[in-house]
Amino acid sequence: MKKTTWALEETHPHLAQRVEEDLRKVMDPELGMSVIQLGLIREIEIEDAQAHVTMIFTTPFCPYAPRLLADCRAQVEGTLNMPTRISVGKEVWDRTFMEEEAADWGLY
Image (tube, rainbow, N blue to C red):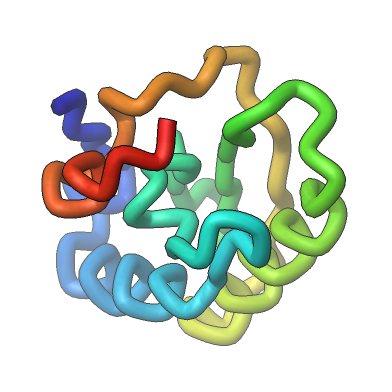
């Protein structure tokens, strides 16, 4: 499995764990798994008192993308108490991004 290391883990390790815990509350409604379990959060960084999150989706035309983007942004803003922008990464998702326990569910 591929483990993503966010810049936030290096620059603000005390915040990274809290952000990860709160992002576990953001669920893909179709798959019933969190954006963390699915490995959709590719980067989180803080620059100039603003957070930036980069995420991907399991399919290019994910019908839940707007909702997931909004929910992730709200969670990170609430946890970090700072403005947060969110963007869609160019990586193509594959099951190796999933947490090991989640990948064992055999969704794909």
